[in-house]
Image (cartoon, rainbow, N blue to C red; front, side):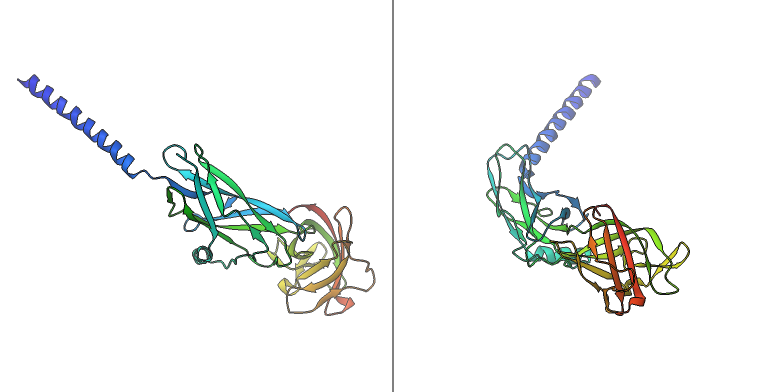
Length: 308
């Protein structure tokens, strides 16, 4: 009798487990959906909220173009069961949400700066399709602006648009040909700050289509070192932040000015001066002064190290 009871209980447990397994499978089928999303592209800048991606587009000349990828992905059981047409659009509300979430102030580029396909097809039997967004350094391009291109999936021919990844903000970096990492040496003409400085790592950062600003990584900001003793350097801080402007056809310096309003900066014309320029090997020879005073001059040589 006891054996019959145990056999009955065993059969009941097996039967119950089988029913639960069948129900689980039915639940999976019932709730699985074909979700369309924007997939990872470039360096992901965010962990929560609106996804943000960054692409370094490198050196782009005025009027030139570069591209970055937009990946559109099908997630669901298997691959796309049919061709899925995905409509993409630019969405200012997406950028507004992104700015609030990340405490930034990115702006949408002018229409002359960007373009991307508004219709994308995920082919049957695949999961991912990639299209290119094109960035053009047009006359409207502002190198000082923090651009963010907000793209969202606004419509799909079949499936569901992802609630978390149905939109994204694409940021990009563009540099001119003078941008890079350099080794700086030179001296300041003002006594007692006229000690030579040398082997100082300096970044020349793009501030315009043909202009770069001195950025001193050691100090963590825009500015320029001065010698204050043998082998010792200091600086005036951001108050003296020279920006060098080149003629892109000749690579000659046409102007030097101050990012700051503290003092005026101009081209130095005193003893030891020369024609400011970038040579064929990318070495820069720069001569500048502040307060229109040749007794406040800097004579710099910057040897190119590599891209920033």
